[in-house]
Image (cartoon, rainbow, N blue to C red; front, side, top):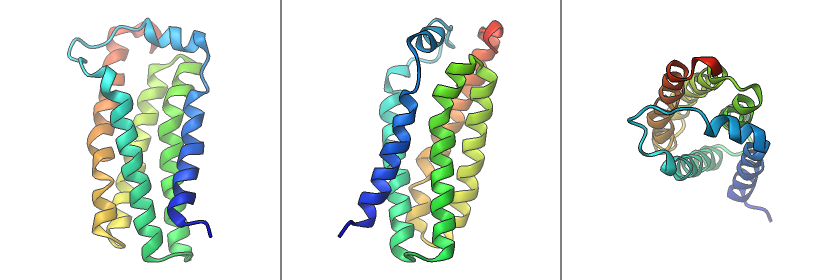
Length: 157
């Protein structure tokens, strides 16, 4: 029998693969952009997001296990999926459109979805809501960084 954590983890992994939907020219565009001087932790960003996605999947697992296969739980699973899709879309969509504005909007959208999700999940499990806090803390940092990059790279806004 397939366990719920396997399905949740598998879906999260498959969606995350879409982040690799970028071309070398997309990567070149982003790598040539100037960064804020205070951005000294860029090398840690993939690890930070990995931890955030693990926390999100764990949160979804807790919610599923509390009220498995109910309509409200399926709606929450849809919100978790939407949050991951919007978050993963940040890189390939921003790179493909070569638009830091698009990245800023996607970052803000993810943050908004996560707030809604966390408030809703709080009624099911405080632990599941707590596991969304890393996203809520980090997402504004990433969004603010992208917004600051618009000022430094106005030609790529």
